[in-house]
Image 1: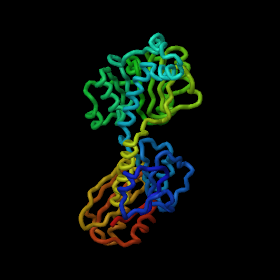
Image 2: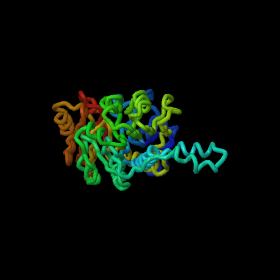
Image 3: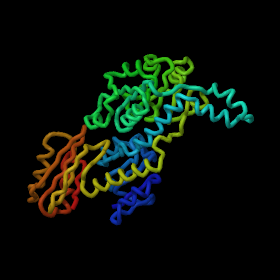
Image 4: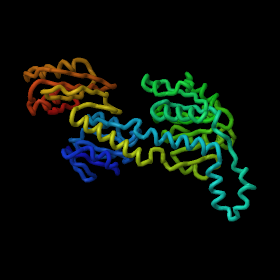
Length: 382
């Protein structure tokens, strides 16, 4: 298998491919791609490309709709960088509370250090203990932030209408879950956002939502650019509604503005995070190419079936419409193939099938299955 890298990917991850893979930046016609921030919307996809793994959580740089049409499975690595982001969010709570940045800049520029004691009150702030943190989104990062804030003596209110059972089990029982954002806005002294950028979440922090917040609220955004309306946040700072805005997504209009602390997208920029993301991305690609199992896909259904000894595996993607399984299995029956095990999963308009059959399989079978109407791809895995 040929694996192309579009960014610098940690060797701790790439080394897991092993000797049966060719890996590098110069690979032509790859079977899979590992990417971080490279913008792929104008990328020329080759016909052999089966998978793309984003070594990170966000996939805004990948054209998901086009990949789905071409049968390219796109993976991400949820939770692999969670601790790195969490630590910087916790640091931002302190940056927003105490004018640490302003104090450091003043000391560096002050020629007479004897004035430090006299002027330090200019940079005084408040403690976070006993304050209320509102966490919007209680996924891998949001839950870790919430739990750490509890450990620091904060009261935490969280909002996440899609909180899973697994996610709830990871959350401290001291986190107060609210039913709507208005409740969170009303209570929070600090608000941190941990949701994906969707049409429904774009500009979710705006003049209307900020009007529902406490005066002097502090906003922290380490999730995605576009979740906070920059014009509205600047206006809210000028009016005193927002005291500090810490963002990992700087833009020109936010630079050199009082009350804004812009950070150069450092959330997941740690050696440990990059290694964790690379390892997870590589493992996802290997599992898919070698066994057809899909884990952590953002455009295909997740599907995993243990390999049955002595069988050949066929993986098939098709449009999620009636009678497709019947059409596929009848094709197998005509080739005298007995199905030992089978899994069918669907996601939106795509269905994915993992089928284990007895014995060897004709190399042309995948082509014959692909010739069926509404089949996206078929692949034989021995």
